[in-house]
Image 1 (cartoon, rainbow, N blue to C red):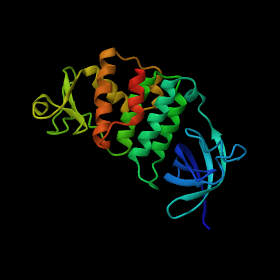
Image 2 (image 1 turned 60 degrees about the vertical axis):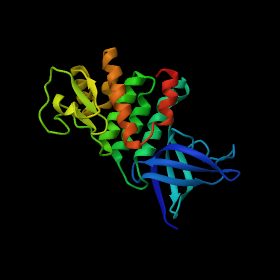
Image 3 (image 1 turned 60 degrees about the horizontal axis):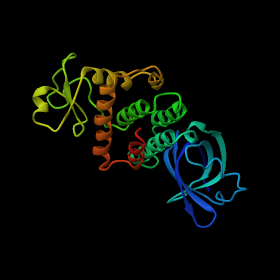
Length: 247
């Protein structure tokens, strides 16, 4: 038997037989993992708490072919804000759903792992909608989907700083006025471009102090949620839940 450890966030879980659960984990060391936690559905199981969704835990695993086996688990961190309001639960669900959807099993991406951890820690401290936009943007960057924010995505020309430009979800980036006429694009103002560039670099904690105009927030929502949907081929379920809440 090959034993290994993983510090991971539980993305989701589902029942398996009477007292077992299948866990989908996103780990710092190994990327996404699928593991069976035998007996963890029992109320007295020590593996029950660490295997709950949104928990950060250390898992001691036995390597398997289709799925690994959880031998032991140690809870490292819970994110109590998730339980405080439906919108915060919805945002946490959105983060984990996107990480699950944009990753393949056993492909490590430590920066994406820490993005998820820090985003869960900021729930209840930062404005939820803006935190979701920052998460979407950084996840797209870390998984290789752009977006291009410095030049026109199609013709590679420099973009003016003061005028409205267009954003193409299909091309995942900004377009100049000429290229925008030939593409299905969303018009955005300079304030939106500035926030995109600001959130693309630096610390995620910037969302704690960032204030944006309502029109900028609407434009960020339109372009980033659509870009996510284009690359996935569908709109995430958790996003639909947030939309119903008005988040």
